[in-house]
Length: 111
Image 1 (cartoon, rainbow, N blue to C red):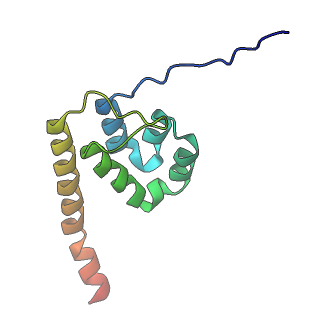
Image 2: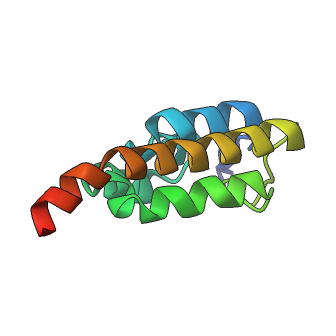
Image 3: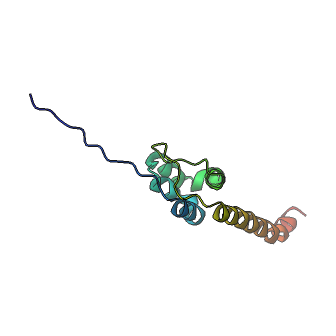
């Protein structure tokens, strides 16, 4: 009888730094999901702009609080709390700046 061995590849944890930077820069396209082996969800995010930015924001926040895991249940390695704080603070500041800069547009539109 021929014994067929299953091909098993070890699933190494993904880098926190790479994942959070990919998410911050290209997250609305779901590229960080492809990096962490979530291909189906990655395609959904690709075609919906990160779940209309909501899914992207949830992923980014979960990475900053170190609760994001790859497809195989591995936590992201080399978690850096300082980098997480900087990314989260930078994101909030960018969103606030965009909101403030768009106020004249919305004021003109509705007044």
